[in-house]
Structure formats: structure tokens, C-alpha cells
Image (cartoon, rainbow over all chains, first blue to last red; front, side, top):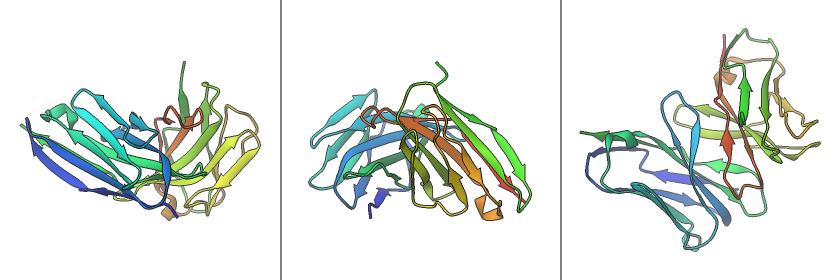
Length: 111
Length: 112
């Protein structure tokens, strides 16, 4: 059974600092997704990672995937207040369409 | 292009009542799924469908039914609502998963 673990679950950062959110998954997966959720809102797709070594960047966020280590990272560069949100990773088990989510990382960026 | 449309946005039910949460997408996506989101639990998969006429159970299917008679619609039925079903429900769709999943705006359900 596929399990997805994120850490940390809560992250408080100062503006301008860098940090990384980690997403570990327990079984083979060939697709990994990152989402952003603002309070009271729906989920917004950030990145789709489909292969080992995949790296995608959008603004101050960069996501990577290491399928051998079963690990994805979301790196935040020079954080700004607008990045405050909850970030979720999710992935599909090999051969399954069951999308499993981590519990999310609530990021707060303080001025 | 409306994307994924969920109705209603808010609903209060009494214990034992039944209701259907509606989900429709206009992107010709084959994959559709329902999740519930509870504080500290992330999103948990209730049921999913890989095409019209095909559905399967997710992680937390008990108390919920689904059907997929058309590509566009994937309603979620609560047969006899219980307070434990108080949650925010999200519907999502995808074209094969290669391009990510598009989520609806959610339905906030309270069962009293």
C-alpha cells in the first residue's frame, strides 16, 4: 500500500530565507505531483514530475524527483510572504490510478 | 472553459439524510475522483473512475456511492449521512495524469 509522508508539517520562515520540504513515498511510483492550497480554497497544481531526475522550477519554487530514493523535494528560494500556503505532494502507485496525498506542509513566511 | 464544477458549495444535513454531491468537467478528462479533506489528514481518496462505466474504491469508500454514466459527470452519493462525514469534499479530473489533476472548488458538508 502506497504511503506518502511529508516533512515538516509546519514551517515558519523569514522572508528572504531558503528552505526545503521533503516528500517520501513507500512504493514505486511513476508520477509525483505538488499542489498549493490557500486557506478555504481549492488545490492549485504546481508541478508534475514524471521521471527520475526530473527538475521543474517556477519562480521561487523548484521541485525535483529521485525515484530510486523515493523522494521528492520542493525547494523555496528567498521566500516571500505570498508563498504562505499549505503545500501537498501526492503520487500514484505503480499501475494504479489511486492518488495518495501527504498530510501537507503549512508554510508561513514572516516579514 | 469551466474546468471542474462542484455543487453545492455548502450543505448542512441531518444525520440519516441522503444527498448527492455533483461534479462535472468539460475538459473531456477520462479520470475523475473524489476526496475528502479533514484537518491534519491531508486529502483521502473516496472513489475514482478511469472512464465512463468504470469506478473503483479508494481509501475511505464506506458510506459513499458513485456512478459514471457519462465522461462529464461523476456524482458522489451519501446514502445515510453521519456526523463523521462532516468534511470538505473535492472532485478532481485528469487527462491520463500526465498533466496533473484539476480540482473543483469544493463542497463544505456539515452533518448534524
